[in-house]
Image 1 (cartoon, rainbow, N blue to C red):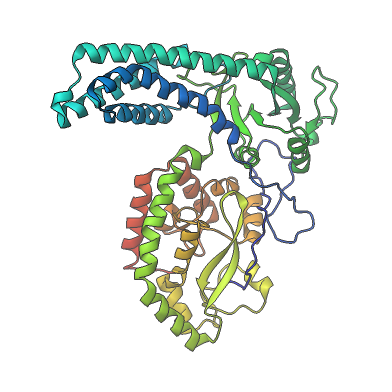
Image 2: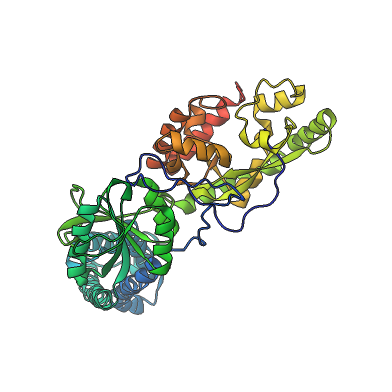
Length: 486
């Protein structure tokens, strides 16, 4: 049950933090259009700094391949093996995170991973050449020589890149906010300020003033304590904050800082493995990567377009029949448009077949369930029961508003309410919302437990894989033969 609302805001909506966060003094912000106290966030900043930092490392790896394989390619007058080695090396290094160096990463930290991946690339290239062009087969001596040459070259080139990066970081440190218990955050900020080699300069602490933290503490750092989202907003903009260092887990704040385009770090937790250089003055650290960035957002989008496009074409006859039925049974206004909350709190206009005409916009925005409403016609009831009213959302998928699989989108009013009541509700918007999801294939549709849906949605995000999306789609298709509706 929805209402007409065709306009979409140009700026993304503010996001209400989850109640389980470690900064309880933060203001809860509902992404409701027209709210007077709504915080207008700036456009989402892209990770330009991360990409620019990766370019010299990509160039170093490619140049090392040319130095090692160039003589072989010239002798055989064949560049295809060279291109294959470059492609394999760059892909394997990217998958291993070798283009996202830590604060003090050195080439010695990376050497084992580089050596293994260079070996795999050369073995793959040698096998491919021997299989498809036996006359150009690479002998064992030439293979070992090229491997050693590339390994030495990549160490020298990457070493130069890392050294330059460390000099730049020391000369031009990035502004950062430290998030955590105020006493620990002050101590940590002091340590970072005394060691500029990490390239991070704390400019504030995100704490909780309600627990007695003064706005300008008398501690060694003299840094202001920020306790509301508005204060964080001003600090990020005025100080050009590029990093957020977390001493405690707070998914809602991590998502907020990632919205600003900040690099987010988690320090101080027990962690086994990883390069020795990944630390901040002895505190182990790791980069907190957004889920969509961490887990193949391109593959997920390709799956959406590949399946949603043909599905929309094949469903055209069904869509026309549904539109005619709605028009005859309920009058004009076959489609309705309703504002929903998508990934990272962005508002978008969701499309559905109209199954009920609400009394007014307030009823549409705030009434939870209309499954047994007597105003619903037989056609509307059938569309809801069979989920055919959701078919127009295939267009939302093609537009990029939604994905085929993900947490179901909800109205801003309920997002605001549920975020205050259910811990982790806001966290479910870390990935694109979807037509179906893990919660839905477990029967959590319609008037069912919101807490259970939160748990399933966050479990889906935390354990996302390409195969799991396909599996959920297959289970959804199988469930259509026994529709339950909502």
